[in-house]
Image 1 (cartoon, one colour):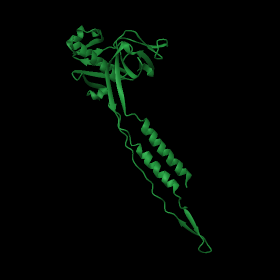
Image 2 (cartoon, one colour; image 1 turned 180 degrees about the vertical axis):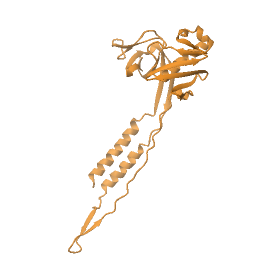
Image 3 (tube, helix red, strand yellow; image 1 turned 90 degrees about the vertical axis):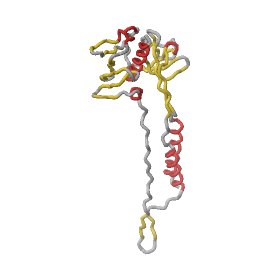
Image 4 (cartoon, helix red, strand yellow; image 1 turned 60 degrees about the horizontal axis):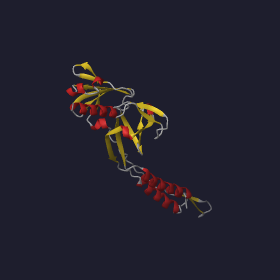
Length: 247
């Protein structure tokens, strides 16, 4: 019995079963809009915990998870905080399924090594005293088993699903698949523009955030905290445009 191969095969079986069990079947993308002005984001899901950030009404936040009546959200500079669910409204939630990678390969390989380790192997060099001088008989090398593992690519973000693309360093596309727009990304900051927005934007409460640059082009100003991702900025603008169409 080869103890080394036996232990190695046993560990492969355990690793395959463990990875198959912990790999998630799905994940969710959830964005919410802050409805209360000067909303405190706290370090823990309780009103007695310290304040780590302050949010303005209309800000779009990325929800990481929910615990009771509290939501853990993503804050700028990689920070996280907790806000109460009564002061936000969900504007986008999508559950996506995932196909599990072939972790069973680890199980099959592990069983193979277990069986291989239990079988008594022939020595690589056999000494036969046929004559006065020993004769060395080499044993043929056994073939190894190899297998490719295909890894499924990540799901596309929201801006790609809506038909946006990157041209000459800019993101170009249409808000709500209707109004032409572009986004300029500089480092971790985003500048959002729109061409010929709906006329109702002049009567909207956020009309002052649309600054004309001439020829129907408007710069969209976000009060701090600004969107921390391209998805959150596009979703916030699309939500405002939907409200402006009803004005």
